[in-house]
Amino acid sequence: MTLLKVIDRDGKEHDVEARTGVKVMETLRELDYGIAAICGGMCSCATCHIYVDPSWVSRLPAPMSDERELLNELAHHKETSRLSCQIDMTEALAGLRVTIAPDE
Image (tube, rainbow, N blue to C red; front, side):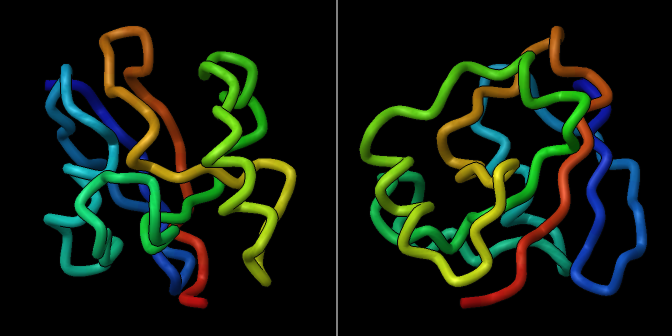
């Protein structure tokens, strides 16, 4: 387990234990204040949209083209937007800080 810092839609920060070896989405959809993740991680719905803290962006792999396309269609898209279904939780990401994006 590793620490994941999650800021909910009300602006409250939570320290959450995240399982390594699974997508960040898996942890976030289990939270009452988390995400819907309707497509289950298939990178097809964008209901797992998050904002990655700017200090962490460079530590993540770059988004693939299908993720970029989905993100660009969102009304609440930002430079730090990512789909949590595309981020593998690893020990190297312990302390990753993300914000749950508004519903579309």
